[in-house]
Length: 264
Image (cartoon, rainbow, N blue to C red; front, side, top):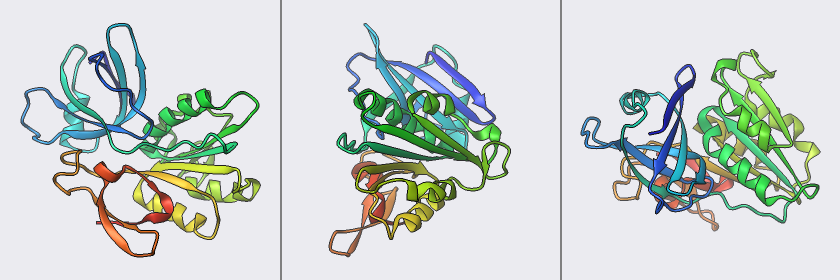
């Protein structure tokens, strides 16, 4: 651990110096993290990769997380120089379509963690003057808006909202997007999202009657991270209309929004 700083009440940004053999992650992938040699809590915690780069002798992994339970509370107390066990990168990442010119990112709360990584990758891929990246970032209050500096740096425009109106537009981030949707061409636009499941469901309702493609990174509790325990199951719809249950860690966490039905 080279850094572990509280950047907002209950939100931490941790930086890890991993072995140079650590594989290059893609936006949307995650790692399973736990204290090395500690058995309480027994299970590792899944955290989205927030940033990644390489130095001469190490791979640098940045994680943005919110303290929500015993596992993340223990991570918040980790100090510089401590060792953590890291399994990853895991999961299916976002599929970037460089042909489309408009890329819209919809982040709710800590959902900004993988999407900031995606925004920076999009900025690397899209040549100047040949496309645009727009982000819609929402949170409950102004002091829980995290990761905005990375979004504003990578995106051509960032729209902000809070549930209580303490910063930006008042209301859910989905409604902020809905108000602007007519201004985008679905033939040349793709959307990427991550946030609480109610946000995902509402986004699906908004886009259901449109032809906008949208990928969503599903937030779900995971125990193993490799699909062995079936503890992170959600229901998805097949192309023929039938549904089936899948493990988020193995077949996701990124899914076509229009196929996601509900969590188990």
